[in-house]
Amino acid sequence: MSTLSATEQHDEHHDHKPKGMMRWILTTNHKDIGSMYLIFSFAMFLIGGAMAMVIRAELYQPGLQIVDPNFFNQMTTVHGLIMVFGAVMPAFTGLANWLIPMMIGAPDMALPRMNNWSFWILPMAFAILLSSLFMEGGGPNFGWTFYAPLSTTYAPDSTALFVFSVHIMGISSILGAINVVVTIVNMRAPGMTYMKMPLFVWTWLITAFLLIAVMPVLAATVTMVLTDKYFGTSFFSAAGGGDPVLFQHIFWFFGHPEVYIMILPSFGIISAIVPAFSRKKLFGYSSMVYATASIALLSFIVWAHHMFTTGMPVAAELFFMYCTMLISVPTGVKVFNWVATMWRGSLTFETPMLFAIAFIVLFTIGGFSGLMLAITPADFQYHDTYFVVAHFHYVLVTGAIFSIMAAAYYWLPKWTGHMYDEKLGKLHFWASLISVNVLFFPMHFLGLAGMPRRVPDYALQFADFNQLVSLGGFAFGLSQLIFLVVVIKCARGGEKAPAKPWEGAEGLEWDMPSPAPYHSHTTPPQVK
Image 1 (cartoon, rainbow, N blue to C red):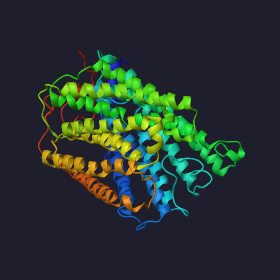
Image 2: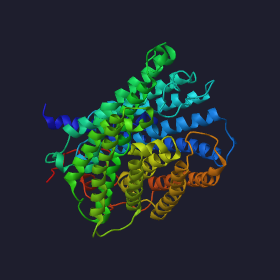
Image 3: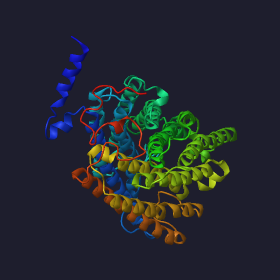
Image 4: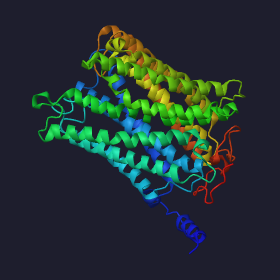
């Protein structure tokens, strides 16, 4: 049987899309699965955001107003878990599913059935996690980093559900990452060498290797927590010969690369959008690739900068301090290259570009506060205060979330076949930009003045800033509903999008009609 007829049979088998619910449950199409990831992540973003609003409502004024301290801790914990594992990571996986096959000239992801499974186990994981909130004794209340002994000796009975749900999230991430690696390595179009791949594909390839390396470490950590709590082991209990600080070493060995897992795909997105709206080629493509790889490698030797106050030897503190400061060099290379790309470009400021520029400025602020936290003696002052909360929210909200928003606006015409409402898009951008800074910038000052994080009550001198922060929080949360309106409106109709709606956009995905056909590249394109 000739290969041609095999391909034709494959196409025929795929062309009859099942209708209704079954299409989504059984689909192996990378675009369907990408859409489901994106919809799921936005739903989780709204749920996690609602929890943040509970936190900010409680902190609106000093004293205990709305929720009891135990429930407050459950909100901070589940908010963190949902935003990290339920909003940011699935959104990037959804973008990877949608875009990688289109960008490298592949017909689909390499392992389509596994792709379906890696999505469908995610909603189950979060159903388990959220159901724990309704158990007697409540849900997880020990922070998203679940430090022992808070997560072992003092944890509620629902900890087993938390451990199980984290295991399932981890399995989903590893399966997705394997799929990305196999697709990129084996399914590039003829002529698409590694150094011709779009940066989004490069950042995802490196992210996938990070996921495969660190997710098993998280699995080991939660398993030890499970056996310490329920089976009488004492990995993290000094009474039985264990060590609670060992927990922090293992957790952060996963947790620090995890932070880069949530930002590297952002770098790929911004590296696609900035050249498109500057109408120039990306400045220093190969240096961007090497910078991304060096960030990934360095991310494995900085974990203990989360632990400067645990009483490590001074030599170790110095080592981790210097390594952490070193990681700002490749990050600085990226920021320099984006600015150099815009320099003397013919810029226009559509919504994706606005989010991209906001990303560059605000992510850099997050980077600078990270450098401050890297300096060991200074970190003794900042540690466990609101300064840390400000730092990682600048990296993850104005970083990861803003880049996801930028990507959604940039590729939405390709996905839906319609142009989104530019006025509403800009309203969403400005509302988000102003409110997010009112929300997180004053937290730096609260932290410097000594307000500890994860506490439902606080001293009177922090009242004014907390009120301001809470107002910013409510405004930011409500602004995201504008985005929901934009997407629904765009999906339902509007001005027809051309194949290439952005003049400066480059890449194989723009050679396809809008909306992108159900099957990408049925015949592989030739890359010059």
